[in-house]
Image (cartoon, rainbow, N blue to C red):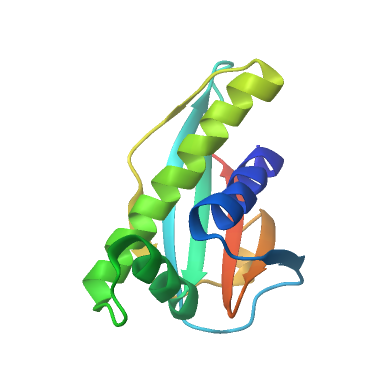
Length: 140
């Protein structure tokens, strides 16, 4: 599941944000906004996908989509939820096209502004311009 979501996140960076990215080592201890969305596969398994972005990246996303140079906390959270929905929604399409499997996605939820690496099982980190994104998956 993680590789599909990472590919969708990379596509988001390239095609929606038009920003370069690279896969990196674990994230720094920056303030990170974190959301999750549950995914149900055809076989009945359920996974929770996490998308986390530091405030620098979230502000860049808000600027891209909303044209806001300085967004308030609630706007950044709303943009994170929309970003999570867009990335995991794209992963759903990729799963159908590349792996001929169907998944259902639920509603994204804001989780917190801090995470610990030990809290997440499978994960990948992306450095996007001056910001950071974490993509993680946990089987429920």
